[in-house]
Image (cartoon, rainbow, N blue to C red):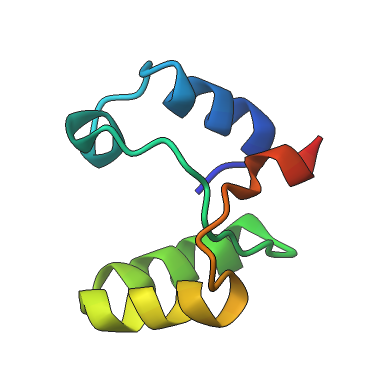
Length: 75
């Protein structure tokens, strides 16, 4: 969750943020979900962390079936 998605994407692509993305070399944005408030974003993030992988993959496939890197569409 971030309030500045382009900045966060740049940080991930540069390998500056420790965690899953850096550990596994993941640097493509294949899905994102804007929210009106930080509170609603946090609630959704916590909810999705409990999802199994198949549900997350289905979510991506519904909105981005080619798994394109959506980062370029933000600027």
